[in-house]
Length: 111
Image (cartoon, rainbow, N blue to C red; front, side, top):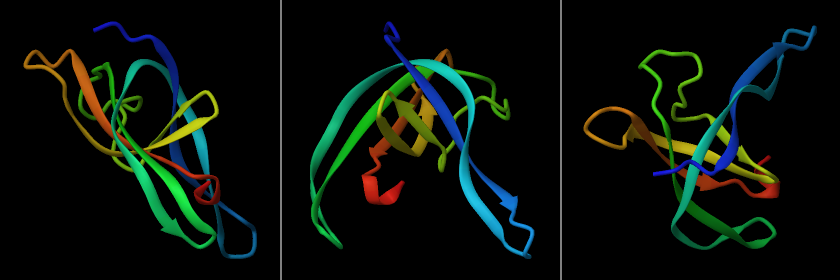
């Protein structure tokens, strides 16, 4: 396996808005090299009609459990202009050298 794409790991963040609430956003955590492979795709209904939903598997080098740069469910991966929502993370191989991320595309209205 040869990771061929430079991906950016994004993590949700909350910052106080000064009025007792919070502003939710995303912060860049780090860059990771990965390999993105299509799992499935299709259309789903939305407020403005059908939208594309693509599911992928991303393979990247593993970092130890608990490492701040290790992807986890709920994070996002940016691949150029595309955003992927990380749904699950599992070891890719028996040696623990690679991680497998199961992810779904994020549409414009979900950003």
